[in-house]
Image (cartoon, rainbow, N blue to C red; front, top):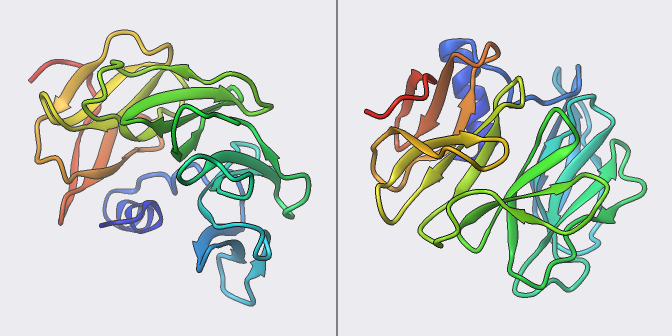
Length: 216
């Protein structure tokens, strides 16, 4: 399965897409063997930010590059993980979901301090400072995965499985969910271009489509 990092590299190389809103000018965050690392984009020695405290995956930079959202089971979350936030140097890690509702995954940091994430096969959101998660996608458990904010924060693109599988978008409030591309359910990590006009996603191959929100 393609990773968000791989989708970022492919998208950047092929269609000039954003590096998944890394938020940091020079550092790349990634997960390896249960820890979150950062490394300079030009290479060098990686820095371990989590140092073996729980299993840590799926990092995503805040837009200003000062913090990283990630998934961790360090708090003994039900069946897997909660969304955590830490400073760019690994300090001040905090569980922001603290949810017994399910396993949180795929955090995506929006431009207004809200993190979208997947849980119970739906898309949810929570403040980056913590709070009660809110369901965004159609709360039917039929597939809300891999959320990604548009650059202006107005919409979220995600993968839906179950009924009408494919790449969908919705308003940041969760209203007006619409399909953009009906594809096999294996499509992963949709990513907006810098100008928000196009979306790339992977399904064995890299696909690119217009982000215009109209039914096809």
